[in-house]
Image (cartoon, rainbow, N blue to C red; front, side, top):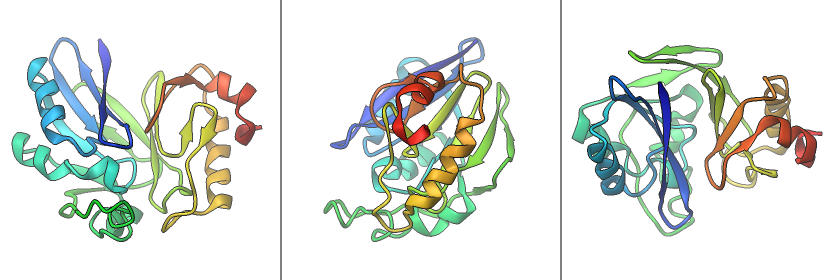
Length: 206
């Protein structure tokens, strides 16, 4: 059975998600955030065996512990091809803006729109959703969607940082609107929601 563990990280309360199989304990870590020790502790506590890290985008509050976790578990990092210059650049990653300098090493895997990523225990689809950044992505699993900072409960991600674009995020939201409304939405910050609820109440999706 596929389960989801949320680990809240850093001063911006970023959501790291660990998607794992309760039988094999195989896992994928999405946006580990700033606090690598906390993520490593949670993985070890449940004896989880991560196979990959995936970043929904390259802003520092989502990626700063990438290298620490890569080294600890000897696993690759995946990010969208248009985001390669964000997470590895402290200006574009916004870490300098928040006086939290830091970058990560280049990822081993680059992702593209509509790509199907197969892990040993599950498969997910990459949906390119630019607007918050040029290479922002959402990750579509069978009955839930990881939205990063593209879509939140009741609102959307900011578009005023490097690589942000309001028109692009509206176009990206139009992709999400076409998905199954019963999908559970797991955003990069804040509480989870249901797509049907966002379609009814989130003004940006109307």
